[in-house]
Length: 349
Image 1 (cartoon, rainbow, N blue to C red):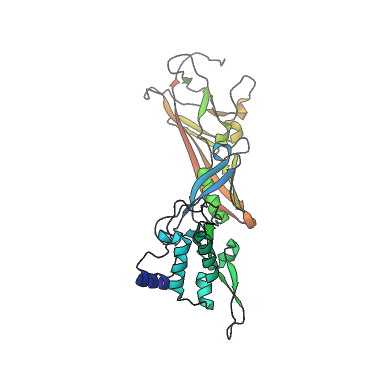
Image 2: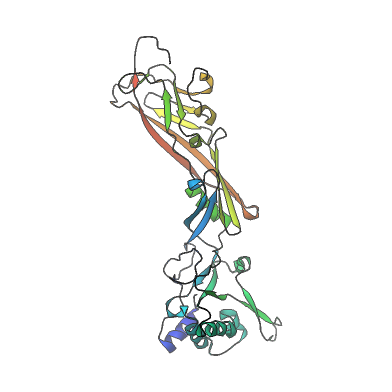
C-alpha cells in the first residue's frame, strides 16, 4: 500500500518510522505477482504474473508460466512494520488526525475497516496485511472492481452520501486478485513464448560416399523434419494467453516466401505444403521443395552452408473484441550440404 506525500510526511514527522510504501512482501498474501523495487508506477512499471498458455504453439503443450508484463491495475502491498494490522491502525489515526471527512474516507477508507482488522489480529483470529489498489488510469478502477463504497454525510453542493476507497486487508496466504492486464499486453506475452521450431531440414539424394553429398544439376529435395517449423500445410501457429477473465489469441502466419533456402550455389522459396513433401518414388517433383546446385562445393570442406529460414507475421484478437498486429518472428537453421560433380547418370534409390 502506498501513502500520499502528505501522509508520508506527517507520519515520518510524528512517529519517525517507515510509512506505507510499495515494496513486495514475503510471507503475506500472494497474487502470483512480484513488484519491482521502488514506488514509480509509470509506463515502464511491470509485475510478474502466472499466465495460462494454450494452443498448438504453447510452451510444453500448455500450462501456466510466470511472465513479466505491464499491468493496468494491481494490488500494491504494504511494506515494513505495517503488515501488522494493529500498527496499521495506529498509522491510520496519525495520518488522518482522527477525522472522518469525505476526503479522508475517500483517500484512506473508513476507520472502521482498519479497526476491524486490528481487533481481529489482536484477538488472534486473523493475520492480515493491507494493500492498496493502484491503476495507471483512474478510469480503470471500476473495471478492476477494486473500490468499495462508504456512506458519508452529504455536504453543500455535493449531495451524494457515499465515497469510494481502494484499501483492503487480505489474510496472510490468501490469493490476491491478479493484476489487470489488457489483451494487447497478453498478446505480446504470448508472442514472446510461442513455440515455432527452427526449420531443420533433411534431403535426398545422399550419395554413399564421404559426407553423403548431393550432385550438381540434380534437383535435391529438401523438407522440414518438424511440420510445425512451417506451420503445417496452412502455414499457421496459434497460442492463447489467459489471465483471469482476460485472454488474447495470437496467430503467426508464415509469409508468402514460406521456407526460404539459400546457399552459395543455389536456393529456392517453397510453400509450406512443398516443404512438407518427403522424397519418395511416388511423390511428384513438381509438388516438392527442390534446389539445383550449380557447381560442386570443392571450396567448402564441409559442404555449402545452406541457410533455411522462415518469417512470420503475427496478429491477435482478445477480450472485448480487441484486435491488432504484433512484431513479426523469424527462425533460422543452417546445414552443410556437400555437392559433388559426376559424369555418370544417377538414379535415386
